[in-house]
Length: 308
Image (cartoon, rainbow, N blue to C red; front, side):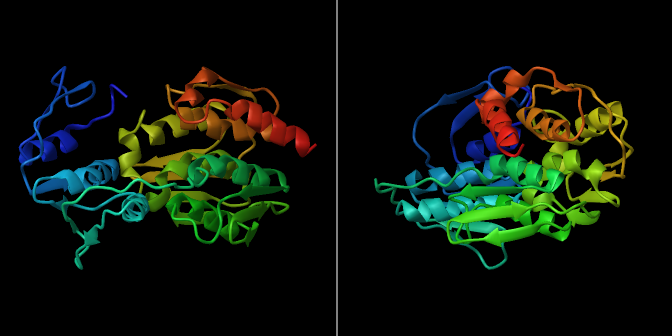
């Protein structure tokens, strides 16, 4: 996390009169915040690096003295996550209005109301298990993620469907049935970029090239994820074309090897999928999954055993 840039959020907070700064002066955590309220009412934030900056500002908006207006500068990546933020804010009694032009968000003052709230399973984490079904020709059912889900990353099953999987969508569950062999695809993964590594890991086993676009911001995550995926797939014998905004993974015959994780939980979880088809896949530093899914490998092994 100390390598993830957070300067655009700090800049926006400064526009609102807050005192928040990078301790080491490099625009990355740790961040020092000297709390004294939030007097400002409007700010501008970059949208092309991460949707998380906008989500953070929206969530504090109800406690700004006069409410908050946030204008997004540039393209807003991972927009579905903003939909999740706004939906949950409304559930807790804090309305937020997206302006017609799509680049301004208005949050009136007020605050939140306490309530009981059922949290959906993480659709991004579920992508690894859906991909396992796609890769092995099996079936995986995830409870709690259905047609009414607010999470954009559940659209990963639409990508799998386009590659030949059969998808059942219930009110509160989703089932993915894998085909005999996946088809290639060409898809804009920008709106669901956290599942791009999942797709990349199963892509070598498709019958045609798998092209992923709209992902330049992946270079600013825990690591340069496009470069990391390219390096590790090539290490396993796969043919990959890397572009500034994405990848094309060609049908390949991967071999065993050790996968470097770059302290990135999604590298570890994604590349574990290859081990369902290829013996000898070893994940370096598997403990990095603790960031979001501490018992991932236990659950992954249980799924693999259940599937025979």
